[in-house]
Image (cartoon, rainbow, N blue to C red):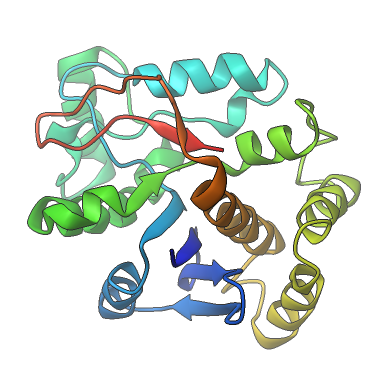
Length: 235
């Protein structure tokens, strides 16, 4: 099974695979490059919302994830736009749509990644086979499991970032080299350090899932109005 992890970054996306014999990373700057990667693997863990609500502000999977991560890390989980606001032309109009249906406004953080959610939604609804390949996940849940059920400091600290990198490197030695080379090859306004570490965590979990299987929050996830699963996947 060919596996990979993908995280969003300012340049577009960062994709990583630790597949035996062919580990590599790639910065994806265009939708066509993303589409090519999606068609090249059998399983991809991605840190981006997929299944969306129509009239409810918070998805069940996000509520469950916040509880699992705990109060100190719940802020790393935010509610994506509802489907009626997905194609709004501006933040103001998306806010209006969100408030009309849920009586809550869309966060600026959620709006900033809406273009990425939109393109994934298009790929998944137009290509049904991708729905079994591309699975929404969350790096902090992966790090928690790698660390025996606990998270060591937040990743916006040097210690927290280094600890996360060490957790990955314990399983994939090449991760340290990937981290160093990507930092050298790309500017911070293209790929942040935490983007690199998150993509590698997703890649590691996707690879491990080939033998360990895939779990999800919730265990039996519902589907949205377009048939996409509303779930956070992990190992």
